[in-house]
Image (cartoon, rainbow over all chains, first blue to last red; front, side, top):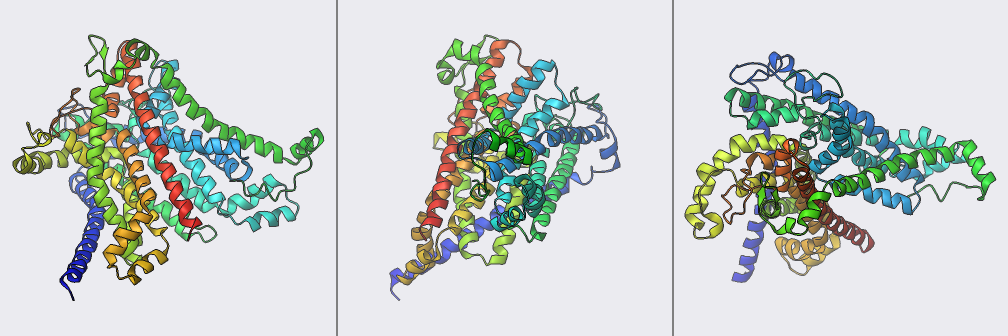
Length: 283
Length: 325
């Protein structure tokens, strides 16, 4: 073997092993994040964390109960607004869409999906907070729904279009009208995929912080209603981590751990639902 | 795509036919779903409209000097966006410099080398990594990355490469470099998973042909497979860039919040998203607010352009991948 060939083989070996190192590095980031959060957060995740209000600086103890409830409230508003719109739009794009209008909508959905979440916050601020005159859970929910809608629409469309054409033809041949075909044959055939897309979307928005900064703002107490400033878990983590108090930092770690556990569990559950489906392949 | 439009036996056009379809419910369903789809159109146009209208004062008062002035003084009513644009671009570039080599390497490993089982497990973990909320990266950055950068990484860089202006100056821990590193971690999963898909699109014959000509495994990968998938890989990089530009929370927490331009990567800076996060809810006065919204508009346009480029590149690869086996 000539020197040059030996060099080529050695180079091949080295570079290929380096790619392996890169992959291990990337995956280890996930475990580092998990490890650090568990290490720093688990001591603070106790009963109080889920049931008590945050304490003022200087006092130890307290929890983030209002933030957890507030997050649930805001995400619920986003779900109520976002999922139906996203789902119906997805059905339109896949089943009814003409050429021009559908491709415009598709392009706009992708555009909306790419808008930085803080800019979505500005929009929700200008259409909800300004007319209402104050920050509110509703504004936060609207902001999050704007992130949820394009995700749901595109994933619904994608999973509906994997339903075999023969199923539609069969139902139509039996005399079903088109909307009945869609409602009773096409959508049920793809429901696992659609549900997965929706759950992943909800998991994504429940961790969003930036759009809530100037829509639902924050609140150290229980929210007084859907039209009042409301605490949320991501914002609470953010403000606690930024504050100069050790006890607040402890709470921030705990909040981070709870949020990450929620998001990852939902993600894994969604993927599990999808993997059990046989009628629909992963797009 | 409208897969079913070709097979539904539509009656001939005309008012009677329309009424017939309305009666069967199909037309109603079409109109209702179209109305919901219209909501998306409305929302997107609404975002652009509100950004445009709410930045009127700043656009009229400063014009293009908004982009070129580096004077940001809320008290004096002077608003220049340059330090924020600079910070946004610099942190994103640092992020790409770190994330692209690592991400491409990992994608090559997952697409070309790893056995199917390892590849799918790793891909699963990387998809989970993409789901980690940004504020959690921020918490880790504040408490873990900042001390690490301050005590180890930045002193080491200063010692070895300190003659370069970008690695000089006071070490604070917070600043462009730290923000870039945490952004790199955030965009890494996107670059990996999309590059991996682009590499998987490359036909096996390409690899076999290269190997048959006597290439080593690495030569076949680097000189044949990667160039074949280059459009998709560039697409993934642009997509990562768009995310990095608009990323708010983790950057806000470690950028240092200094509205001026520094050559050194160790220095604290500011990004567009970070100043919006910090000052928007407390801005007083219309001009101040409009200037902040104008920053949002700049950020919006920046990410839209980058995103469009990413999408075109990704579409181009998938078309070619399936069109010419």
